[in-house]
Length: 499
Image 1: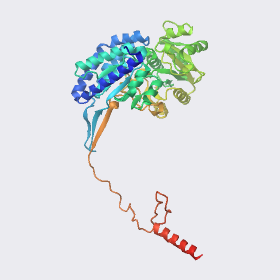
Image 2: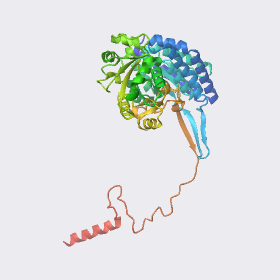
Image 3: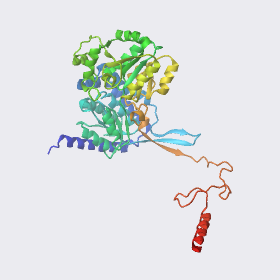
């Protein structure tokens, strides 16, 4: 008898996790050299298939740009490998002879890898590599809208790993994705950790599963432009970040906050580079199609070019437009485009000075980007320092495209497609997730001596000025010992008898 789809999915998940557990029992005994050879094979396979996987992702999801997805896959393969190849993740990874402490790396086990529709192939390569680098195995749960390309990416890295000596089943992928299947994967008894990349609801479900989880919150990244900025470069970087893969990276710019004194010049620079400013009426029309009543982005516009969004909104824009820019005057429900848009649409604010710019950036972060990222285009170190110290985010990206700087492509941050938002953003990690987040660390510590109290620190119990504390059971009186209490009670009894 043929199983219903939901039952078939549940059984598939159980089979995949069981296979991953058997593979991990083997993989945990591999040497550093064996693990590194597997990671090299994954990196080479990912790099070799970058463009094919990019074409597959764009065709299936209809999101993003082919060229930029090629770069994402290359970045998740070659660039990530170069960053992690020399990391010690097996056995004794650190010896501190001065403090007499050794650190020993142990794998966490089977990892549930949740894959988003916005980055369906690059995230597979990235998560597979950091999982196997740490002798963990991984089972992927694709987004239903990207099931085929995610499955293909998983197949490619799995075959490469097997050829390099990894055990069968070390990388698995659900072929019939569903909510029930993802929940089963996250809660399965053999699942040791969840590595979640996706929407807020999915990340919350990961944290509610009862398993250790590494998840990320939404990004609503402001890009503040200070009067000291090189405006041509700022405009170039903002549009580069916002239009990269049509805005599908969570670290991409969502709003420009510009000082009044340089605003007109900045607007001219943006227009010269393909920014198209909307009128008030056009902004209202675009708002209605980009942002849902729930304040979430409309899935129909995610990763779409500006011409597609304009047509959906019933307006006309030049074929040369790279990004739609909407002048806004507030933050919140009355200004729908102040929320995260994950598309080629930017908000634009003008402020009197950097102090007001600080406040506007915080307002934008508070409606959906706390803890994630902020870009600042500035050469005044005092202002940069104030932003670094005062803003409630964990990635302050200075004079760089936010989308690329946040993932470590144009900065020296760790290359990653899972960007932690810390406790402020409801995340258990505040930095870019690397292999080191997927390890249990044992510590061996040698005896270094018994700490000595200063001479005279402990007073004799019989000293005259001793204050005896109240017993924890409440039967005594502070400052009076038990003999004194007994004598008082005896005297009271005698007095009562005389009466």
